[in-house]
Length: 396
Ligand SMILES: Cc1cc2nc3c(=O)[nH]c(=O)nc-3n(C[C@H](O)[C@H](O)[C@H](O)COP(=O)(O)O)c2cc1C
Ligand SMILES: [Fe+2]
Ligand SMILES: [Fe+2]
View 1 (cartoon, rainbow, N blue to C red):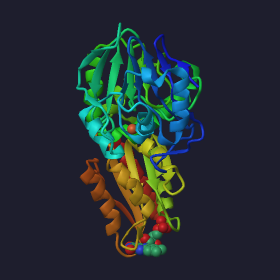
View 2: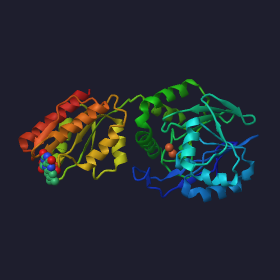
View 3: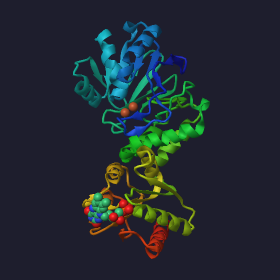
View 4: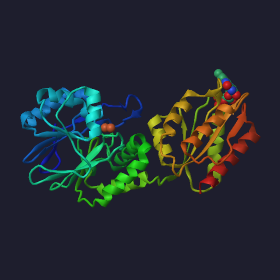
């Protein structure tokens, strides 16, 4: 299936409605995803990115129906991750001499993954090439989210090909932002940003500023996943500006796990306390072993405050809590306050360690850790509510 994006640009990618997990099982993709490849047909014919390896045959067969493969003048690989470069390996068996335009880091990553000495043409930030009436301007965007990531702007058609940036795991054959459910689209855009780009917030912030300052006339954004932006370009740019600047929501996310319910009771009491403080703060509770981890990360990413709880177990914490902490410490902690709680039987050290870990990652942990010996009684639960009030008060 092909979809016309503009006069000279055709989408030739793959819609994968069935995909439910991405990056192994790390990220849930409730609406599937798309691997977006585009064909630009001007004086030069340019293929932009490809699709994930399992769809290589299907991709090549479809591409053959669209263009004589030998008429592809060059390929641009914005980002060498296998979800975009996988099918290139197979395509290059058919057109082995076709130049591949990518960043220096992209060439290294492609060589490292496919061990082929393709005809790489290294491009640099700001470099321009003409493909007829239109001109391509390359925009390197290192660490958004790999060292090799780049975007490019196509003048004439006024399209920004943005790689994973502005992407969403969202499979809808309508393919344009104006034609799909807006709420789902923006929720998936945020989840994508939180889970894939937010660990590199500082670099992303600079790049988004640079992009805005370039003052490009952008009529269409063609990302590497999900629908094409046309109607909501300003909205998605504003959102990226907000997210990269760590402008957070008035939300506290409480995450915990519990073996016998003691830590859970404390989590519930903390939540009650936050609402009792009456500061208009929304809360979300996640029992880590029951919630989807990529949804937890999205909530953590957007919240002004996070509260993390675990019981002590075998001189450590529950592995579910340790697992999500591994991700949380890699999210940009700027402007995020954190508090820690948990129940223990003989040594609370593992619960203190959570607090240390968050502090070391840069979270603002300004309240003492709430540690409860064995099960909380009514008096201790009331103290947990007070702890919740303190958290709410410390946020504003
Ligand atoms: C398998 C197991 C290992 C535990 N290991 C520790 C420990 O190393 N240190 C400690 O202080 N308490 C330990 N405890 C006690 C728990 O932390 C305590 O029972 C706590 O109240 C459980 O909270 P929960 O109901 O939220 O699971 C352990 C309990 C279990 C069941
Ligand atoms: Fe990627
Ligand atoms: Fe991707």
